[in-house]
Length: 329
Image 1 (cartoon, rainbow, N blue to C red):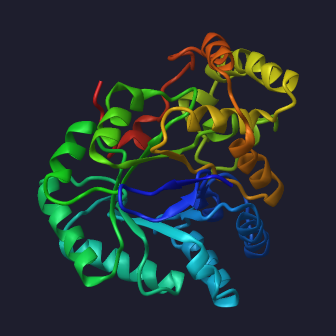
Image 2 (image 1 turned 120 degrees about the vertical axis):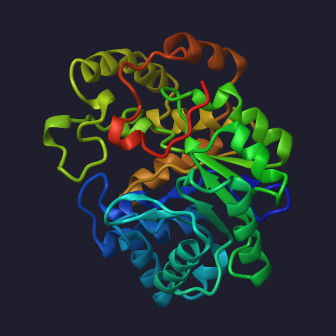
């Protein structure tokens, strides 16, 4: 697995990371045994950046990872772990107050069975507090040795600029794939300018850019895609039809659709680190294969022709899912 640096002065990680939201059951049932086999496979493949969050489950994803570390203590040093806080569970909301962020972090460390994490994100901004103040709180956690670096999820380029004046921001995390390209409107550029890694979640479009057929009516109520505009009709049928040509393009070259989608993401900049998620060791191997794909300029032009910016039908989030996400266009 080729490697990329997580933040300007951060650790090297496998250029394809792993998003552990699926361990929390957001895309269907999961269990600890399968999750642990997936983590075993990740280490075998060189997938070393592990991304989780307090809210995944809630708590389940971190608990599964903590149980894995308990059985495999050496894995703590091999994985570069990021987690997130700042979202209240009941009622759901956003709280970036110093006491709450510390409480979130301490809970995450306890569930993970570690005394620090390499990267800690504010999962969603609390707009009642200036981002400069929040960044100052996180900088204090860095000085204490609780976290190695600071990150933010789903913020705007302007917010990143403000935060970076207080303390270096190692990573910004947002959805980015062939069907969600908003980061190209300033965030990718701001990250490159400031030495911030751009961590791309959902690079396979929540399963759409894979070879596994999806059936939205069968989604469980807890499934994140249930009610998502891109997975409801008539948008879903339009999206399936458009993506069929991309799947055909991948097959013609002997690639899986997922590997091609992730390889495209990797081509968007050396500071981009995709973190596809899965509940399956085999699908993890498909995702990791993106590191071996070499896309020529001709391939990139053809992909852009097949799936041009803005092709997807439907908003990427429902109104409820959009809460807390900063818009910048």
